[in-house]
Length: 487
Ligand code: GLN
Image (cartoon, rainbow, N blue to C red):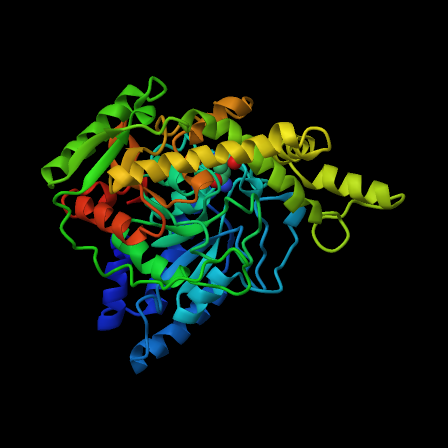
């Protein structure tokens, strides 16, 4: 049995370039692991084995001819929110269960151009709405560290697949925490970039002013490699930002002596699990040993972030999801009586309960007479939240705290209680409202379950985030741990 799965994406890339392994061998090894383990985890919605093997054979030719890039021949997986030409793109919903995308998302085509191999599409909460992956039409994903618990969400399939080493890396999206929270709960490294850095073209829209795609992998070093491919201006996305993209792998080794780390008191409040607090504290101690300075700060409007988000995100989703009307593509009900019946039954039957809840909340918040009271107000408060970060970054270089208030919770534990589910993102949501970048890095275990340290940076400071995470990972091995049953 090969042990490729113990290697990181960066190491695999080196082995491929050195000719020590072929992409065909590697891809085959990962496809076998998926076959062996995914019946338990349910982390993939679609696996494209034959296509992956063909791509791998092509990649091997490129590798042998010397024209390869760092990701040529490396297998990855895409969250099923990214449109993939000729491959089912379900967004975790019955609504798109039979949808084969006619085009690739920009993120997908960028990976294609570099010669990365796509193993398949990962499971997710329906339309990325959720924190536990339990709202998926395809059933819940299990956390490989304890299959009685959730992997987090909405990018739960990507996180579980990387944690169980069924793929070296995966893409994810983060609207309110959906890269960072599942990364934390599954013990992997995930990065939500600055809003506008990664193209949203072909990434099925949930809340357009918050959605952002990013990498999920074992380490910061791996994320740097992936982000260098994902990031960049795209004329097909009007919110994409024209800025020069550095090579994120350069600068990983920069010393972090004198780094000023802000600790917001709101992120260490009584809502934080005590075991998680201790693990976060020891990670912060490690940073101090590495030469960083810890500074107490305040993000006084943090308390507003969950209520503001649950007005803004549903409002935007109610507009975005109006395109699923049973007419052009997606689910259509049987034998509609008339147009109205077609709309209402197609949507009624095609969407799950959480999606419907959000559409109703959003439609209400946007309706005449309520718009000023809810949506406008929420947008005003959003400015206050952004200003908190602006002020903080005048004082410190990065902000740290927990990514999630608790480790992985039991399947079903919060499924019937939307408010307690919404609170899973209490430490991540403000980052999306402000548009700044944030990461989660594995820093230990509480109750035998992984804990993620959140690192938040100023706009476009991804290089620094990756550097700060990498220095920690060089001196620890939490990111190298593999759940026992998947080793
Ligand atoms: N858990 C949050 C929600 O349910 C965030 C989801 C996300 O980031 N896509 O909306």
